[in-house]
Length: 77
Image 1 (cartoon, helix red, strand yellow):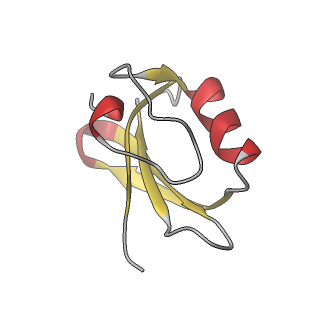
Image 2 (cartoon, rainbow, N blue to C red):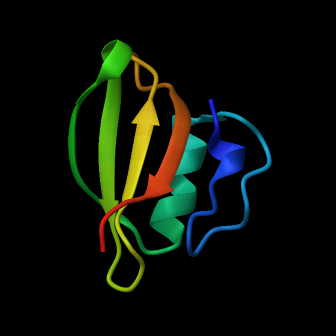
C-alpha cells in the first residue's frame, strides 16, 4: 500500500497509500496512458501494465477484486 511512495510521470503526486481503482485508472487515462496487459500477482492480487507514448511503462498492483489500486511504479525503459 504505497501509492504515495512513487512518482508517476504525467500525473500529480499521489498523497494517499491506496486509491479506488476507478480514480487511479482515470488519472492514468487522462495523462495519456493505455492498458497494455495484466497478470496475476503475489497474494492473489492483479498486476496491470500501462503504456504511454512518451513516459516509461507503469506497473500497477490492484487488490484481488481489482477495486483498489495498491501501488504503482515505472518499470523498464
